[in-house]
Image (tube, rainbow, N blue to C red; front, side, top):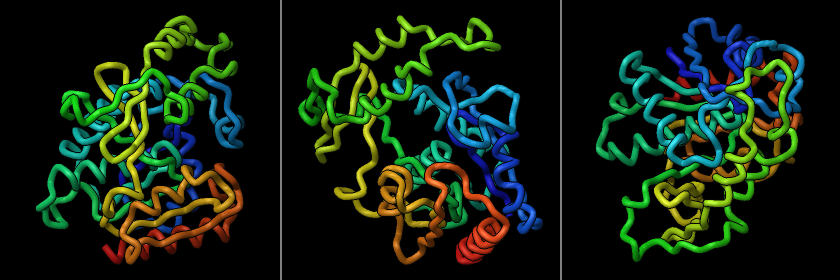
Length: 286
């Protein structure tokens, strides 16, 4: 049983291996393949794991204000799946879970007649999953189908800007090479160029004039993920940290486990053992 593993934003493979160690110890017959992001993460961190356990550089898989970089991350991972697969399942945490969901959704949309063994994955495990992003070229839509407007208020761009433009993200960091330091002027200029975009289904997002980004919409679209899934999340968290993705999945094959650690990774022997049991359950059902 081979599982592709995607860490959270502002993390690395060392941290994700440590976070999942207890789970993996109970699933010794599974094989875990960790893929590390390539975008340097230089912001401040809040998690117990990223602040205390790793001295290695931290990474994400893409730049939050650049839809093209999200599309490139998806293509890079599909290349890994083609070259190093097949994989039975995929495990993602936070932003890695969002990206995992995007791969599953895109694979299903591009291969609607594929048999189960022809799909990229047979099952998925999402931990504190951020809502998946739908990134696209504006050329994919007729000009009359898109509404472009000057304001990004209320769109995902506001949240992305809060991530990359907060003081902790823009200040110079000790111990970081100059080429990896944030270019404050470039970040602000990139944000200033963004415009709002509304898709035909009402989804609100942003565009840089060439590409756009919205969230996949769990309300207006049919079930987007039809393979068995496990959703590990904290009910007290924001809807876009787990619940929204759960609503996109086939309910008859979606399992849930709730924890009390907000957006941090679950922990504790009893809790991790139960999550491992549920992973085996969802894998056996696929």
